Amino acid sequence: QQQVKQSPQSLIVQKGGISIINCAYENTAFDYFPWYQQFPGKGPALLIAIRPDVSEKKEGRFTISFNKSAKQFSLHIMDSQPGDSATYFCAASIGTGGFKTIFGAGTRLFVKA
Amino acid sequence: DAEITQSPRHKITETGRQVTLACHQTWNHNNMFWYRQDLGHGLRLIHYSYGVQDTNKGEVSDGYSVSRSNTEDLPLTLESAASSQTSVYFCASSITTGELFFGEGSRLTVL
Image (cartoon, rainbow over all chains, first blue to last red; front, side, top):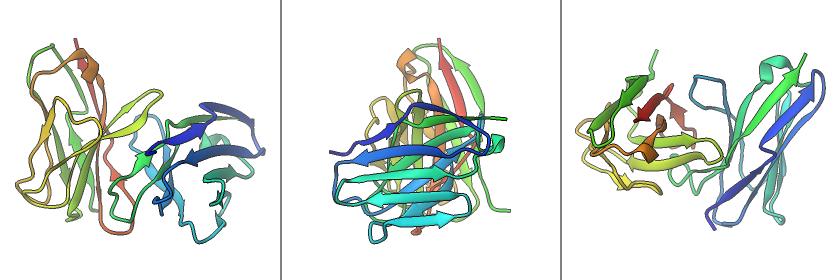
């Protein structure tokens, strides 16, 4: 019940295309859903996050879509660029403070120039 | 600038040896965490701390220990290193916004 399932494991997208990464969760107590971006040799960094009271959040080219009834959320990267090539992790937590943050297995995105 | 630093960045050790990974943050965050990252498993929580003298076990705590004697540091100790503990270890800290701030990681190889 604590799992966060992420797909796909890897993704190749052409420059300018849309990258879509999906996540699903079971625990309805989760109330904070962040996405982290990680470049090789670096630690993950927060990219964008959403709470379950909204269905969509957009920041620049990055959008989270959230479907509470289906217990699913996804990250859309519009106009994907080679600089977006990284590993993306979805996560879910109960409350803020970072406690009980459960991460998905990660998606390795490669954007072809 | 405030930051979170880990050391060493790379370490090779032998089975059975004790290893300590250091984590130091200058944000004055009360909450600190240790995660391990393995391909196909994402990031899994090892131990965490709410503040000085407080430590708690995460989902993969067996074989690891931590201590919190001040706000800035949360060292992670492997009492008797095992090959299954070969991994990349990340320290993180947070306040109450939900965002985790990660260090750059420590790559540990146990031979």
